[in-house]
Length: 160
Image (cartoon, rainbow, N blue to C red):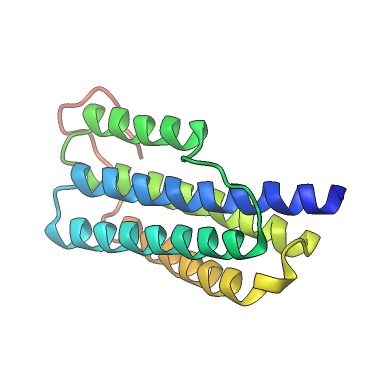
């Protein structure tokens, strides 16, 4: 019984992570200047929405009760991205770095599920999502590395 409770809790956490990712990538797409970055972030937002839907559908099939919305920490992270962007307007790198941090958080949640072997019946779905998140994290890392060190453009905050 306790294992079922933990399974439900972790599946809800995975769904929340995907919903947070959807909202975070969508917010980031609104913040960046680069058209190609904006399109890529929107595409990832739609992908994360599909991930959440797949997990919700699976949870319903398993008879589990679900959380209805994203997490407070996800909302806080999106607010932080917006705040940093306000301090560093026209600095896509700031937004992309925060997206990368968000992906790293999501990967940690998935890794925890794998280590505890809590959801072996949906392992394939989780592995596919996990690989996509790894690829996105790596792409975000590459994108931020290409732009070089951040310089102040008349903003309050200087990141180097």
